[in-house]
Length: 78
Length: 377
Image 1 (cartoon, each protein chain N blue to C red):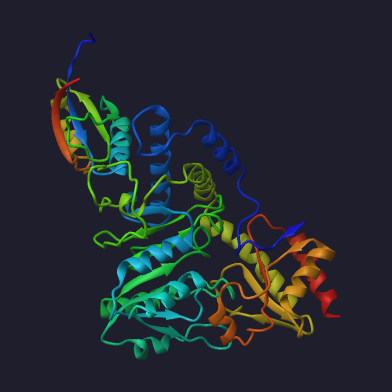
Image 2 (image 1 turned 45 degrees about the vertical axis):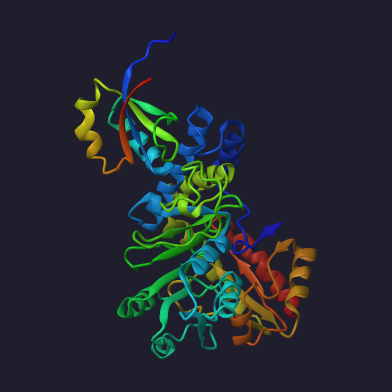
């Protein structure tokens, strides 16, 4: 059984917003990557930015400053 | 072969375009359909192209650019998606059938349309805008440049009129995207429709529209969006709101490469070269006996289009002769601009359109002039 870890998932209404977040985080070296939205999360565009939960507080302000408004923010063990 | 039919479609393209399409065919998945690397590659590429187009048109946000398969689809989306019975629209006789035909259809459904007239050089009679307006007028739909005469619309003037009465401004940039600087914010353009394969020099099957933030357009098509799959309704958020089904990722890859080339070379610089060749040709052709030019050649701003007739010769016959004897590719006939042909009294004869790009040369212009001279003898 694989070891699960806690993550924060940010979901988006559109693929464009997900792409914009990926571009934004990549430029600022904010950790994480795009993943398909798990079924248990109310899905937006089908993509979510996944960031380890313990690292999220460090980057929360930077992510908010992107101006990209996530559709939803959830904490999950994946 | 001498290709002077760039107003129909570009033929010589930046070298990166072909490479980008081939690379896309080899590597891209379906944009917005999952998160494995090929699909993310497609999503990244398409998002990058939206950003490039937003920069080109001075759009405030890349998400306001939706892709379509051509300018016609973009115009149909805008026209059929914004108006209701009882509305009145002002357009012009300079429009292409991609504007005229949807509007004719809409007239059958209770939408009134007024066509602004032109003078003998095909210049729009802007003074008649005021008298064209009614209490039900909701929009002005105008081409940025005539595909027949190359005359450029004074967007500042039309924008001022639209702004004065709170009308929507919808611009057909089929002949000007990538050719003339376009600033949607400066001119308060509500919807800008463009194609990817003419001045933008990308592959056919690409195009799109910019929609001003806050403006909602009913979609022309609904269906697969890759998102909100259990919702009965198509997503209403741009750009997915106006994009149903798989996008032309391979074509958009080529378009993105063309946009990179244009960004580096400069829209104005590329156009100056093409327009210089067009002016050289117009000057030479205008001095040939029996040749009649159509359009306003004194205007400072023009598309690189020169349209003419030689005596009473049928335009299609002239085109065929130019191809057969000189390998010159030009377009005759009606150019899908029936109202402007009628206004210029070329409805039967049509006209021969020479359209230039940055890839044409002075030598090609000289050959074309020699051919027209020969045919005029």
